[in-house]
Image (cartoon, rainbow, N blue to C red; front, side, top):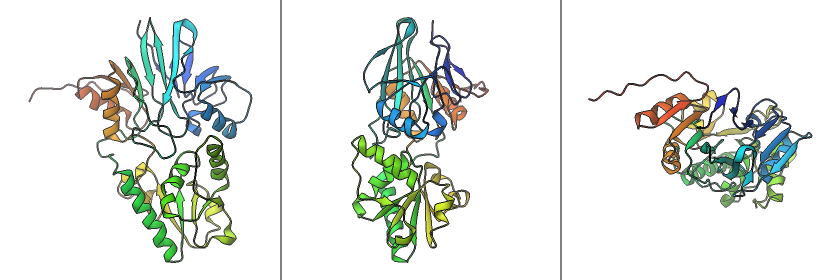
Length: 327
Protein backbone atom coordinates (compact mmCIF):
# COMPACT_ATOMS: atom_id res chain seq x y z
CA UNK A 1 0.00 0.00 0.00
CA UNK A 2 1.37 3.42 -0.99
CA UNK A 3 1.84 6.29 1.47
CA UNK A 4 -1.32 8.27 2.26
CA UNK A 5 -0.84 12.02 2.65
CA UNK A 6 -3.32 14.43 4.27
CA UNK A 7 -3.06 18.21 4.56
CA UNK A 8 -4.74 20.27 7.33
CA UNK A 9 -2.48 23.23 8.27
CA UNK A 10 0.36 20.76 8.15
CA UNK A 11 1.01 17.41 6.55
CA UNK A 12 -0.25 14.27 8.25
CA UNK A 13 0.64 10.68 7.49
CA UNK A 14 -2.38 8.69 8.75
CA UNK A 15 -0.70 5.28 8.38
CA UNK A 16 2.03 6.38 10.78
CA UNK A 17 0.15 8.80 13.05
CA UNK A 18 2.82 11.49 12.72
CA UNK A 19 2.57 15.06 11.41
CA UNK A 20 5.19 16.97 9.44
CA UNK A 21 5.65 20.59 10.56
CA UNK A 22 2.12 20.82 11.99
CA UNK A 23 1.15 24.42 12.72
CA UNK A 24 -1.24 23.54 15.57
CA UNK A 25 -0.63 21.39 18.64
CA UNK A 26 -0.57 17.64 17.90
CA UNK A 27 0.38 14.47 19.70
CA UNK A 28 3.44 13.83 17.49
CA UNK A 29 5.17 15.87 14.80
CA UNK A 30 8.47 16.04 13.01
CA UNK A 31 9.87 19.58 13.11
CA UNK A 32 12.20 20.34 10.23
CA UNK A 33 13.36 23.70 11.61
CA UNK A 34 12.38 26.29 14.21
CA UNK A 35 10.84 29.07 12.12
CA UNK A 36 7.54 30.13 13.67
CA UNK A 37 5.37 28.80 10.83
CA UNK A 38 6.78 25.28 11.31
CA UNK A 39 6.48 24.83 15.08
CA UNK A 40 3.77 24.39 17.72
CA UNK A 41 3.48 23.01 21.25
CA UNK A 42 3.37 19.34 20.29
CA UNK A 43 3.52 16.65 22.97
CA UNK A 44 6.23 14.69 21.15
CA UNK A 45 8.64 15.84 18.45
CA UNK A 46 11.55 14.54 16.40
CA UNK A 47 14.12 17.06 15.17
CA UNK A 48 17.86 17.64 14.90
CA UNK A 49 19.85 18.67 17.99
CA UNK A 50 20.32 22.20 16.58
CA UNK A 51 16.59 22.59 15.93
CA UNK A 52 15.93 21.41 19.50
CA UNK A 53 18.11 24.26 20.82
CA UNK A 54 16.29 26.86 18.71
CA UNK A 55 12.92 25.37 19.63
CA UNK A 56 13.71 25.72 23.34
CA UNK A 57 14.69 29.35 22.76
CA UNK A 58 11.63 30.26 20.70
CA UNK A 59 8.91 28.10 22.22
CA UNK A 60 9.77 27.10 25.79
CA UNK A 61 7.71 24.36 27.39
CA UNK A 62 7.55 20.69 28.27
CA UNK A 63 7.64 18.18 25.43
CA UNK A 64 9.13 14.80 24.64
CA UNK A 65 11.98 15.45 22.20
CA UNK A 66 13.89 12.85 20.21
CA UNK A 67 17.02 14.56 18.95
CA UNK A 68 18.05 12.79 15.78
CA UNK A 69 21.43 13.70 14.24
CA UNK A 70 21.71 13.74 10.46
CA UNK A 71 22.10 10.28 8.92
CA UNK A 72 21.12 8.26 12.00
CA UNK A 73 18.29 5.77 11.39
CA UNK A 74 15.48 5.86 13.96
CA UNK A 75 12.90 3.07 14.14
CA UNK A 76 9.25 4.08 14.41
CA UNK A 77 6.08 2.01 14.65
CA UNK A 78 4.79 -0.25 11.88
CA UNK A 79 8.24 -1.10 10.56
CA UNK A 80 9.01 2.46 9.44
CA UNK A 81 12.53 3.91 9.69
CA UNK A 82 13.11 7.67 9.86
CA UNK A 83 16.32 9.44 8.85
CA UNK A 84 16.96 13.20 8.88
CA UNK A 85 19.04 14.78 6.10
CA UNK A 86 20.29 18.40 5.81
CA UNK A 87 17.94 20.83 4.06
CA UNK A 88 20.36 23.76 3.67
CA UNK A 89 17.70 26.26 4.82
CA UNK A 90 19.05 27.32 8.24
CA UNK A 91 21.41 25.66 10.69
CA UNK A 92 20.00 22.27 11.69
CA UNK A 93 17.14 22.36 9.19
CA UNK A 94 16.27 18.88 8.04
CA UNK A 95 14.42 16.79 5.52
CA UNK A 96 12.62 13.68 6.77
CA UNK A 97 13.13 10.41 4.89
CA UNK A 98 10.72 7.64 5.87
CA UNK A 99 11.31 4.09 4.61
CA UNK A 100 9.01 1.11 4.87
CA UNK A 101 8.94 -2.32 3.26
CA UNK A 102 5.16 -1.96 2.96
CA UNK A 103 4.84 1.65 1.76
CA UNK A 104 8.19 2.39 0.09
CA UNK A 105 10.11 5.62 0.76
CA UNK A 106 8.82 9.14 1.35
CA UNK A 107 10.89 12.34 1.55
CA UNK A 108 9.50 15.52 3.10
CA UNK A 109 11.78 18.50 2.44
CA UNK A 110 10.43 21.21 4.70
CA UNK A 111 11.99 24.50 3.56
CA UNK A 112 15.20 23.81 1.66
CA UNK A 113 17.93 25.36 -0.47
CA UNK A 114 20.29 23.58 -2.86
CA UNK A 115 22.74 26.48 -3.18
CA UNK A 116 25.63 26.44 -0.67
CA UNK A 117 24.93 28.30 2.55
CA UNK A 118 27.31 30.31 4.71
CA UNK A 119 25.51 29.39 7.93
CA UNK A 120 23.80 26.03 7.31
CA UNK A 121 24.67 22.50 6.29
CA UNK A 122 24.75 21.52 2.60
CA UNK A 123 21.41 20.22 1.32
CA UNK A 124 21.18 16.47 0.66
CA UNK A 125 19.21 14.82 -2.16
CA UNK A 126 18.26 11.29 -1.06
CA UNK A 127 16.25 9.13 -3.47
CA UNK A 128 12.57 8.56 -2.62
CA UNK A 129 9.43 7.08 -4.17
CA UNK A 130 7.21 9.90 -2.87
CA UNK A 131 8.40 13.49 -2.52
CA UNK A 132 6.61 16.20 -0.52
CA UNK A 133 8.45 19.40 -1.40
CA UNK A 134 8.31 23.07 -0.52
CA UNK A 135 7.71 25.27 -3.59
CA UNK A 136 7.80 28.85 -2.29
CA UNK A 137 9.41 30.15 -5.51
CA UNK A 138 7.70 27.77 -7.91
CA UNK A 139 7.39 30.13 -10.89
CA UNK A 140 9.96 30.48 -13.72
CA UNK A 141 10.56 34.17 -12.97
CA UNK A 142 12.13 33.30 -9.61
CA UNK A 143 15.69 32.47 -10.64
CA UNK A 144 18.15 34.14 -8.29
CA UNK A 145 21.43 35.75 -9.40
CA UNK A 146 24.67 34.27 -8.00
CA UNK A 147 24.97 34.86 -4.25
CA UNK A 148 28.43 36.40 -4.64
CA UNK A 149 26.97 39.06 -6.94
CA UNK A 150 24.16 39.89 -4.52
CA UNK A 151 26.54 40.04 -1.55
CA UNK A 152 28.83 42.44 -3.42
CA UNK A 153 25.86 44.72 -4.10
CA UNK A 154 24.79 44.49 -0.46
CA UNK A 155 28.25 45.46 0.80
CA UNK A 156 28.34 48.38 -1.65
CA UNK A 157 24.97 49.54 -0.31
CA UNK A 158 26.31 49.49 3.26
CA UNK A 159 29.53 51.33 2.40
CA UNK A 160 27.67 54.01 0.46
CA UNK A 161 25.17 54.59 3.25
CA UNK A 162 27.91 54.96 5.85
CA UNK A 163 29.93 57.28 3.59
CA UNK A 164 26.86 59.51 3.26
CA UNK A 165 26.28 59.67 7.01
CA UNK A 166 23.38 57.20 7.15
CA UNK A 167 23.03 53.92 9.05
CA UNK A 168 22.49 50.88 6.81
CA UNK A 169 19.79 48.66 8.34
CA UNK A 170 19.54 45.15 6.91
CA UNK A 171 16.09 43.68 7.45
CA UNK A 172 16.45 39.92 7.99
CA UNK A 173 14.57 37.28 9.96
CA UNK A 174 16.27 36.83 13.32
CA UNK A 175 16.81 33.08 12.85
CA UNK A 176 18.73 31.94 9.79
CA UNK A 177 18.81 34.90 7.40
CA UNK A 178 20.49 37.25 9.90
CA UNK A 179 23.29 34.79 10.57
CA UNK A 180 23.76 34.15 6.84
CA UNK A 181 24.03 37.89 6.18
CA UNK A 182 26.36 38.46 9.12
CA UNK A 183 28.80 35.94 7.65
CA UNK A 184 28.20 37.19 4.09
CA UNK A 185 29.40 40.73 4.81
CA UNK A 186 32.34 39.64 6.97
CA UNK A 187 34.87 40.27 4.18
CA UNK A 188 34.07 44.00 4.21
CA UNK A 189 35.09 44.22 7.89
CA UNK A 190 32.13 46.45 8.69
CA UNK A 191 31.25 46.98 12.37
CA UNK A 192 27.88 45.33 13.01
CA UNK A 193 25.16 45.75 15.62
CA UNK A 194 22.43 43.15 16.10
CA UNK A 195 18.88 43.42 17.37
CA UNK A 196 18.62 41.79 20.82
CA UNK A 197 16.62 38.77 19.60
CA UNK A 198 18.96 38.30 16.65
CA UNK A 199 21.93 38.41 19.01
CA UNK A 200 20.33 35.83 21.32
CA UNK A 201 19.88 33.37 18.45
CA UNK A 202 23.34 34.12 17.06
CA UNK A 203 24.78 33.10 20.44
CA UNK A 204 23.14 29.68 19.99
CA UNK A 205 24.75 29.39 16.55
CA UNK A 206 28.11 30.10 18.18
CA UNK A 207 27.55 27.43 20.83
CA UNK A 208 26.81 25.04 17.96
CA UNK A 209 30.19 25.82 16.40
CA UNK A 210 29.46 28.54 13.82
CA UNK A 211 32.07 31.32 13.77
CA UNK A 212 31.04 34.93 13.06
CA UNK A 213 32.90 38.18 12.53
CA UNK A 214 32.93 40.68 15.43
CA UNK A 215 29.50 42.09 16.30
CA UNK A 216 27.70 43.66 19.24
CA UNK A 217 24.21 44.35 20.55
CA UNK A 218 22.38 47.38 19.18
CA UNK A 219 23.24 50.61 21.00
CA UNK A 220 21.59 53.79 19.67
CA UNK A 221 24.24 55.94 21.35
CA UNK A 222 27.08 54.54 19.23
CA UNK A 223 25.50 54.02 15.81
CA UNK A 224 27.96 56.00 13.72
CA UNK A 225 29.72 53.83 11.14
CA UNK A 226 27.81 50.64 12.03
CA UNK A 227 25.64 48.28 10.04
CA UNK A 228 22.49 47.20 11.91
CA UNK A 229 20.87 43.79 11.33
CA UNK A 230 17.34 43.45 12.65
CA UNK A 231 14.01 41.71 11.96
CA UNK A 232 11.76 43.33 9.32
CA UNK A 233 9.13 44.44 11.84
CA UNK A 234 11.39 45.78 14.59
CA UNK A 235 9.71 49.19 14.59
CA UNK A 236 10.89 50.02 18.09
CA UNK A 237 14.51 49.69 17.08
CA UNK A 238 14.03 51.45 13.73
CA UNK A 239 12.46 54.45 15.46
CA UNK A 240 15.73 54.94 17.36
CA UNK A 241 17.83 55.30 14.19
CA UNK A 242 17.57 58.90 12.95
CA UNK A 243 19.14 58.35 9.51
CA UNK A 244 18.25 54.75 8.70
CA UNK A 245 18.73 53.44 5.16
CA UNK A 246 16.87 50.15 5.03
CA UNK A 247 17.42 47.09 2.83
CA UNK A 248 15.22 44.00 2.76
CA UNK A 249 17.10 40.73 2.27
CA UNK A 250 14.65 38.35 0.66
CA UNK A 251 14.00 36.26 -2.42
CA UNK A 252 10.91 38.41 -3.06
CA UNK A 253 13.31 41.20 -4.06
CA UNK A 254 13.09 39.63 -7.54
CA UNK A 255 9.59 41.13 -7.90
CA UNK A 256 9.29 44.53 -9.53
CA UNK A 257 8.31 47.20 -7.05
CA UNK A 258 9.61 45.15 -4.12
CA UNK A 259 10.99 48.22 -2.35
CA UNK A 260 7.54 49.83 -2.30
CA UNK A 261 5.74 46.71 -1.11
CA UNK A 262 8.39 46.02 1.54
CA UNK A 263 8.72 49.72 2.45
CA UNK A 264 12.48 49.91 2.25
CA UNK A 265 15.17 51.82 0.34
CA UNK A 266 16.65 48.73 -1.35
CA UNK A 267 16.02 45.01 -1.66
CA UNK A 268 18.48 42.20 -2.33
CA UNK A 269 17.47 38.69 -3.54
CA UNK A 270 19.50 36.62 -1.10
CA UNK A 271 17.21 33.74 -0.17
CA UNK A 272 17.32 30.66 2.06
CA UNK A 273 14.85 28.87 -0.23
CA UNK A 274 15.36 27.03 -3.51
CA UNK A 275 14.64 29.06 -6.63
CA UNK A 276 12.71 27.70 -9.62
CA UNK A 277 15.78 26.16 -11.26
CA UNK A 278 16.83 24.38 -8.07
CA UNK A 279 13.30 23.10 -7.47
CA UNK A 280 13.46 21.38 -10.84
CA UNK A 281 16.97 20.14 -10.20
CA UNK A 282 15.96 18.73 -6.82
CA UNK A 283 13.18 16.66 -8.38
CA UNK A 284 15.63 15.34 -10.97
CA UNK A 285 18.04 14.22 -8.23
CA UNK A 286 15.44 12.60 -5.96
CA UNK A 287 13.73 10.77 -8.86
CA UNK A 288 10.32 10.35 -7.21
CA UNK A 289 7.41 8.42 -8.68
CA UNK A 290 4.96 10.91 -7.19
CA UNK A 291 5.35 14.52 -6.04
CA UNK A 292 3.22 16.60 -3.68
CA UNK A 293 3.95 20.35 -3.74
CA UNK A 294 3.45 22.62 -0.76
CA UNK A 295 3.51 26.39 -0.03
CA UNK A 296 4.08 29.33 -2.35
CA UNK A 297 3.30 28.54 -5.98
CA UNK A 298 2.48 24.91 -5.26
CA UNK A 299 -0.30 24.56 -7.83
CA UNK A 300 1.74 26.17 -10.60
CA UNK A 301 4.82 24.08 -9.89
CA UNK A 302 2.78 20.88 -9.78
CA UNK A 303 1.43 21.80 -13.21
CA UNK A 304 5.00 22.36 -14.43
CA UNK A 305 5.95 18.88 -13.24
CA UNK A 306 2.91 17.30 -14.87
CA UNK A 307 3.89 18.95 -18.15
CA UNK A 308 7.20 17.12 -17.78
CA UNK A 309 5.44 13.79 -17.37
CA UNK A 310 5.49 13.49 -13.57
CA UNK A 311 2.64 12.53 -11.27
CA UNK A 312 2.32 15.74 -9.23
CA UNK A 313 -0.39 17.28 -7.04
CA UNK A 314 -0.50 20.44 -4.94
CA UNK A 315 -1.46 19.92 -1.30
CA UNK A 316 -4.19 22.21 -0.02
CA UNK A 317 -5.30 23.20 -3.53
CA UNK A 318 -7.88 22.06 -6.04
CA UNK A 319 -5.75 20.54 -8.77
CA UNK A 320 -6.87 21.36 -12.29
CA UNK A 321 -6.74 18.59 -14.89
CA UNK A 322 -4.11 19.44 -17.50
CA UNK A 323 -4.65 18.26 -21.07
CA UNK A 324 -1.44 18.27 -23.09
CA UNK A 325 -2.29 18.16 -26.78
CA UNK A 326 0.21 17.49 -29.58
CA UNK A 327 1.13 20.52 -31.68
